[in-house]
Image 1 (tube, helix red, strand yellow):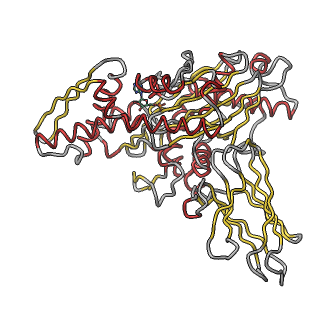
Image 2 (image 1 turned 180 degrees about the vertical axis):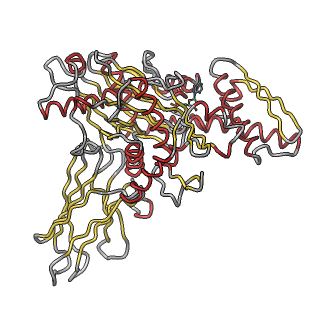
Image 3 (image 1 turned 90 degrees about the vertical axis):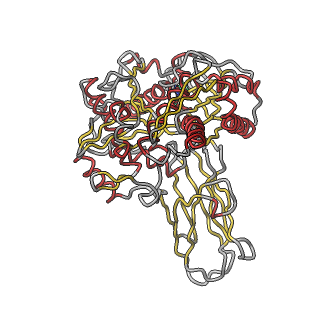
Amino acid sequence: MTKPSSQTPGNAKRKAVGIDLGTTFSALCHVDENGRTQIIPNAESERITPSVILFDGSTAVVGSAAKQNAVAEPEKIVDFVKREMGKSKAEFSREFGGKFWSAEELSALILRKLKQDGEKFLGAPITDAVITVPAYFSDVERSATMHAGQLAGFEVLQILNEPTAAALAYGIDQHSGNETVFVFDLGGGTFDVTIMKIAEHHIQMLGSNGDHRLGGKDWDDVIVNWVSEEFDRQFNENPLLDLHSYQDLYNRALTAKIQLSSRNSATVVHSYAGHSLKLELTREEFEHRCRHLLEKAKSICEIAMAEAGLEWNHIDRVLLTGGMTRMPSVREMIRKMSGRPIAEDISPDEAVAMGAALQATLVLLEREDDSGERNISAQTRGKLSSAEGTLVKVTNITTHTLGVVLWDDQQVEEYVFPMLKKSTPIPAEVKNSFGTAKANMKNVLVRVVEGESTVPAECTPLGLCNVELPPFLPKGSPVELTYRYDENQVLEVRVDAFGKQSVVKISRNLGLNETEMETATADLMRICVE
Ligand code: AMP
């Protein structure tokens, strides 16, 4: 997403990786000399790293060791950070060691752990990364993820949609012909569906929808709430009031949920305030209690298909990613709803990181084409090119509408005019001409928003673009507005009026500004990550 700075080394010294920065787990992958994707294990020899942080003095322990301590020291733990991405410090922060940590900074600690362990494994510095996000992430959430990568010391080559990454991994590694695939990605905290068309050297996104507050945690919470209600009923005590008890119950619920994917029943035992409760949960009962969650997921799939103007018989295969797609009821719902075959040969935990690594390599190959350098192996280039030698191309679409706030003709009410509609292939450029709202306006202040509503208050403000006007213009004088959206989903807004021009790259106003980035980098350097 950023151009290399003058200090960054040439491709010869670059090592790029793909990172799936997940709500519950994260994974790191690279492309080896032979063009094969390889998951890089962490220092604990695990292929995926729990996205959990434990603050211990000036050390941040990331991964399984942190997760295991969650019950003993819940007050020192941070998890599910991804659900908070894009929030300002006023909206979300956690205090440790006298400092308030934003979601970006916390994510940067997870990314630093991956980078550190990866460098140890590869025996060389890792310079660049493609980091994945749910397709449904907004502009603000994407830029928070990019900032997190930069804070961790990466040059962030691109922020890539998770389903696009999964389709890329599938398209390059397993597949040879034209196929339309439906990517169903249900992770620990987010849900995303995307329809992709895979041709020999072109992967194209056709439609997308999702809910970034729907994920495995909601299924876990069903069990947690059921046990706590039963506890309350029998002993008149609420086990959720105590943080240790909650964390313990949460872990037991998670274990039961995973057991129910392979067994017909699971036992949950919980002790609190001198009482102990043992409950038996059958798969049938669990599925019944969670049916509203599956219904929600199903309707999001149907909306995505309708928005793309497709019927299920247009889909050749369904790709499943995210740990929750191991749950039999999830698979069953997809099978019944789509009637289409499921690709069984991709790993739901690893496909996204693999696709991100392939995309990172593609970006470096494109740079080699621009510079004429050749450092990446011919085998790798061949793997990522068509028979004619053209590099694989990935086309994404906008996942939200980008609009401008205007006054209605009577100047009574403001409304949102959609400039770039949802599902427009990117890069895209659109131009529209508007009239000034009043006579003798001194300037035009364009308010850029993101969202599907026509009501400004229901959309997310992205930024402002201001242009001064010459004096004494009549009402309705023409002002030209251009929105340009590039491959990295960075929006540039241009206002042209009477020879004057104002151009702004929408710098997302909720994330960290430059000074905050510098302070955050310095703070992060003081912390030791394990
Ligand atoms: P992800 O964010 O893709 O790593 O997804 C992790 C989510 O998948 C968490 O909510 C896990 O509890 C859940 N998960 C992992 N394995 C299973 C399984 N076998 N059955 C049910 N849920 C699982």
